[in-house]
Image (cartoon, rainbow, N blue to C red; front, side, top):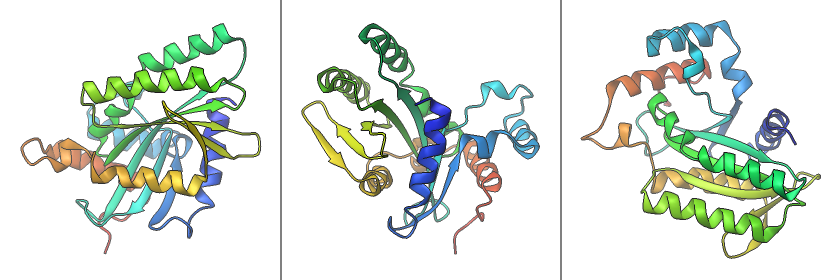
Length: 222
């Protein structure tokens, strides 16, 4: 599945979970943010640049009610990578490319998101052992470099079911539990430019306000 198709499908699936996943308010896709003139105007102003190609836009944003955040909202930015089945050589090439880009979610902290997540979605036909070796390498990289982001690898079936792949095993998982885990990341890995008092950046906080405006979220949850 192409990444644009994957985004649309995941937005549809996750949006259907409102009411099942505690606190989930909204799901926003890249197309919802990046295509409007309002987006271009607001982001250009807040970043003080005209060429928006350098301003990152998450593939998906999950908006939760937040109880330990600066404004009562928990904003989760997700970088998606779709890795499709095919010849082993081509699959490995795609995986190498995705590995080179593992730091991309960290850019979203400059926009004021609370949590940055990298989510690789593999076709169900790709060999488990290949994915597990890959997951092990990525997790080691994040852990040893102490990068404040979370990584998830899943397979997605044609029926829209998910299989979580870790470096040790694979297991079926309902999407609603996966989304809850995304929200739980806030407990141990959150934007240091907002929540670390010594590093708090007021420009980042202003950009957060712009992002909420674009997503039509009130400035502060009452």
